[in-house]
Image (cartoon, rainbow, N blue to C red; front, side):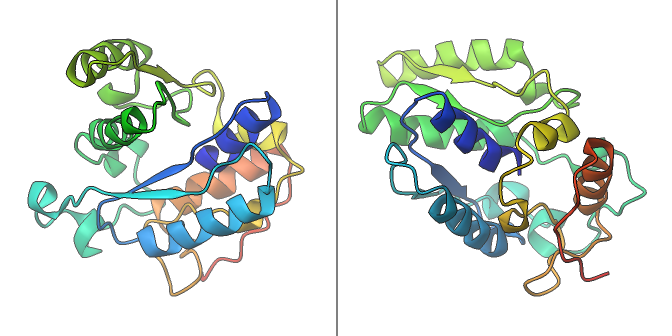
Length: 205
């Protein structure tokens, strides 16, 4: 949801946006990618470039992780740390950077929020990884996180007019619906409540 808002935010700032979806084979990606396409179509801004899908399969790295098998998906009662995906931002940003460098793009934006507990989501990591990517790709590379000091509810409140019913957050899809019981569905529900914005999501449970 914050990545979708990020695209809208950058467009509102007059920036050209090259949306990149990194597909690793995780359980929710088909639903998420469908939502991304609908969201970008709804934005329909002149400076919005066509979506690019970059393949970065995670199965060889993650093995029988819950994100691939769908077994043991963290429920609503579990802390945010339970949804850890090993090296997630390394995979996302590294793949996007390689693609971006080939397009002559030297700036990456990610929708990381305040309070993210993982080491690859800190300002320090983004700064250091930017330098590593620039050195490896022989082009300057800068990683931005415009929402780094905002909570999910603050992002929702700031973009309340956007079509949030087109976004996806669920880790355990129930067909075309979000399950309503996983950690991310619970986080989504709380964020809408705290933002005092009606939640347009249709949950399965």
